[in-house]
Length: 205
Image (cartoon, rainbow, N blue to C red; front, side):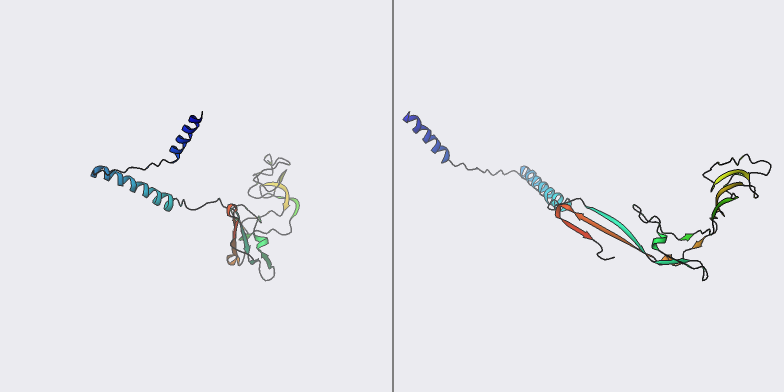
């Protein structure tokens, strides 16, 4: 038993006190040396050229999250000296918010003194005659007309409508003055959550 313990201690001592060294050999062969250095250059080019420079592997990345909003500023008007109406961006940007776009009104069609009544249809209403009003079905709504058909033929050869009278005439409009001088500011707010970084292009607009 004592000999067995002594043998185990001796084997453990021999295992811990061993040292292994790598033996290098020199191969004098131009073909093998050329292949070796080509492989080294290829690996070096991949690591430096692609991984570090092209792919920027040394940089940490994060997905950007943020919002973009637009703000329109300016004032305009329609009418002349006697009927002047002042307008600002709140009047002309319709709708006030829109995804990925904005709509700025540059011309306005106004139909004053409208009231719900019965009047002759416009060119979008069905054609009729005083003797044949079959196209003017009572209470019939057409997406092409501006109101409900009464069932009678109007004096202009178009079906009579129950609607807001007088009818709107799109061919008559007023250009919004000074709208070309409006300014549109694009506000961008972004954040990189991984790095706890927030950025914006404005602080007081």
